[in-house]
Length: 152
Picture (cartoon, helix red, strand yellow):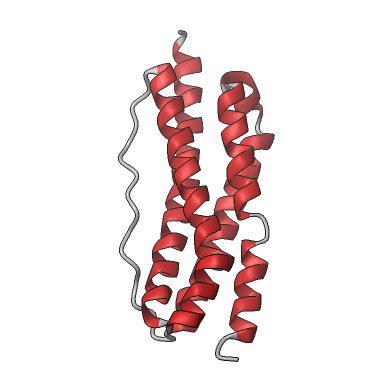
C-alpha cells in the first residue's frame, strides 16, 4: 500500500477514535447520572438515553478495531473515562453528554462526507459510521426531554 494511502487511513482511524472518545465521555456521564437517580428515574434514563449511547459506543469501538485490523494500522486503546463530578448534579451529568454526542455526530458526519472516507475507507467502515449515527440520532433531544420532565 502506498504511504499516502496508509497515512490517509490512519487519519480516518484517528478521527473515528475522537468521535468514539466523545461517545465514551457521554456514556460515562450518563452512568454517573444513573448512580444518583432513584430506581424509577434510573430506568427512564437507561431506556431513553443510556442504551442508545452504549450501543453506539460499542459499535464505534468495533468499527474502529475492525478497520485498524483490516489494514494493519496502529490503533490506540479506547477506554471509557470515569464520569466527572459536575457541580450541578443530575442536570450536569445529563447535559454533559448532549455536547459530547453532538461533537461525535459532527465528527462522524465530517467523516462520512469526506473524500478520504470514500477514497480509502471501505464498505464496512461506512456501514459502521452510519450505524453509530443512527444509534445516537435523537439522543440529544431525548436528554433535553428527560431533563424537562426530571422529578415529575
